[in-house]
Amino acid sequence: MVLFWQNVQQTVTLLIILSILVVAHEWGHFIVARLCGIRVDDFSIGFGKRLFRIAKRGDTEYNVRMLPLGGFVKIAGMEPDEAPLIAAKDKIRGKDNADPDAHEIPLVAENVGEASAYTAPDGFYSKPIWQRALVIAAGPFMSFVLGYVVFCLMGVTTGVPTGNTLNRVAMAAPGGEGQRIGLRIGDTIQAINGQPISSGEEMVDMIHGSAGKPITLTVQRGGETFTRVATPKPVLDEHNKPVLSVDVVQPGALATLGLALHDVLAQINGVDVLSGEQAQTLLRQNAGKIADISVARGGDEVHLKGPIPQAVVQTPPTLNPHQIGLLNIIPVREIRRVGLAASVQYGNKTVGDTFRGLAYLIHHRELHKAAGGIIFMYQATGLAVKSGLPDVVSMLASLSISLAVFNLLPIPILDGGHLLTFFIEWVRRGKRLTDQQQQWFLMTGLGIIGILFVLIMSNDIIRTVTHQLPQ
Image (tube, rainbow, N blue to C red):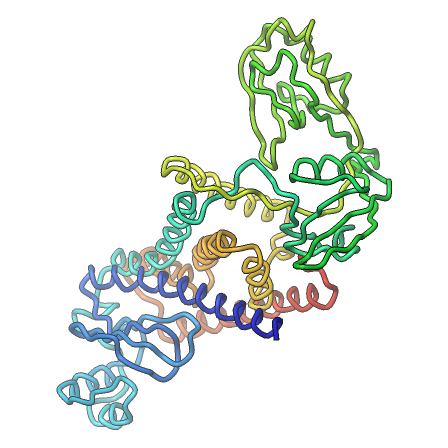
């Protein structure tokens, strides 16, 4: 029964997320179309048969439909043969029971003219190219704005992750040692080798310092407590040599520069820190000079910039270089509300990280591996629901930005495909593609989308069958 209600909650949450994403995207098309004087016949939440009409303003009907999978906006003039239907709708508009799905509309349409394009002044293709392009681009733009605004407001609403971590599992990565021993999202690590754990920093330090050594984890899951034995896997570089973590035990004179306990030295003036002895040498060599010291702190990269005090020669930091052991689990980060300025700063950083991650995947040709379809989104929603509201909201914002980027791809059917045809029309000095060319263009888009659908669904199925999903 518990599993059933979890699946219901997961499904409802995903439907709400998808509906918000699509309605915001379509609202972008709608509002700019109205501003450009283009007729909009229908703005619907959901698809299929109409359940009820919310309102009717001018030519536009606002409806709720049967299938809660997003929504759509019907802009007059975009379909090549809709003139008779629009005329029929106008003809019966005065009836009290006028229904956009009523059977009499197609019947009346048969008597108001042959199938033809809607060419009235308020039709889509009656407007100049720049207005049509604005209408199409407004959808992805609104998707991006939604994602950006949600990220920027998380700090003052749901809260955002801080530098502090908790001794609770946020994710057990696929194929990792943590997943092998059965750790799941929400598990709390109470003790390691019998030593009580009270923070994420303690948990990570003990795991990192136990590379290749079996450790006993005391795990709490709901009302159940049990133990698991795991062996943190050493991290190796491209030459198959162990990677060392140079942890700060005491910051010494570098405390004045901002170095803190539990920081991990990563770089000093752009030079990778590979050992404790090397780090001390670099610090002595740069004493009295301006330096940029990069450290890992609570999952974030922090840059300490300023003069290294001369006292570092007499009072160097105490370092603990050791091999890094990993269970491939991510600890939960403490969520805290912050002020508006800090919240906006978090939004800017998160959006920037999103695009940098996308650029990395494209540059390394790994985008296809990260792509996921409805199965992956359903599974990711389950993880987000278990983690809490901040993760659900963050997922909504990330998907909204992804939707904006995907829709701008120059593929026929997508918004980017429409923009491509407008560019071709502009290059040809206002000469539109012929009906046959548009048909071929459309079929090409359907083919590309079909191939992408198969590839993405294959990814989802392979991940599911091989259990390559976070737990």
